[in-house]
Image 1 (cartoon, rainbow, N blue to C red):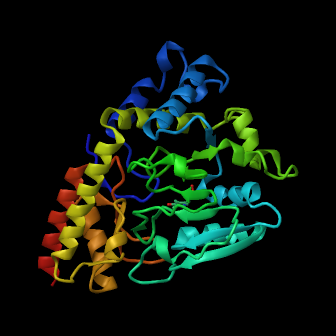
Image 2 (image 1 turned 60 degrees about the horizontal axis):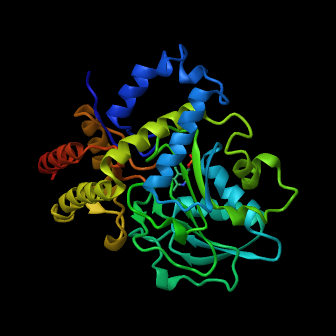
Length: 359
Ligand SMILES: *Cc1c(COP(=O)(O)O)cnc(C)c1O
């Protein structure tokens, strides 16, 4: 078996442990004589997985009892619409921090639903960053403040979260469970699973239950949080297999703890950023230092030609997925929870050799 170092931004690397367990259990799940892929979502075997996935998230993130954990579909992108449809009530304004490509997409959808105030805008700044808490211009009595905790494309991450009087809503798609977070400070957290939690096809929503109760009555049933809260995410068929993998991934996280993972994540990122900084400007970090992401390390080379060569030679050397997002170019190394520290060390070795050979 040969596994390469997978720097994909999402879907992304999964723990080998998890893949092996899924393989071993695939044909006959827990002595049921059938695969979990073939199980009814109302069957006992699946119910236990559904519950475990929730329980693991609740304990890992210390999610208080007045919050529901939902397993939805449609990706984080559907949350760009569901959040305002449910929480941006008539006559109210929602504050949005426009920090990059993902935040901008959330803004675009919210504007279709209601009144939006851009509380800060650094979407197009280079070096890339997210707003600092002090520059936010918040609306009095806002419906909520929306932030993107980690801008996956630009590689900028909130290190300190704002504490507005209104509910704080966060798109944590690319850094959920990578660091400890006080859930009680948020009204709603959502994340597409395919970066740090599991495979695609599943979106996790953590919502303070009282916020869901005020949604307009005329919303489509499937787009109301209340529907999914009342039905324990079983109103319709949930993405059972993705939830199963999430249960395995969170089992794997529980063995180490979020604090440990956070320390490892920070160390992995620091090794890469140090290599960038030690290159005397040959490799240039894309994000402003204080906002550098621990999950997506973005950088440039002296020319686009060298970037293309870097990606091609890296791929040959066993480093996959280093090409930056098509909208911004450059290099992006996504080093989520499941990405091994050895892979970062190996990449740094490759970067040193590539620079010597090409400068
Ligand atoms: C990937 C990503 C999304 C989009 O997720 P989908 O599940 O593909 O809709 C949204 N926000 C952030 C921060 C992301 O990284």
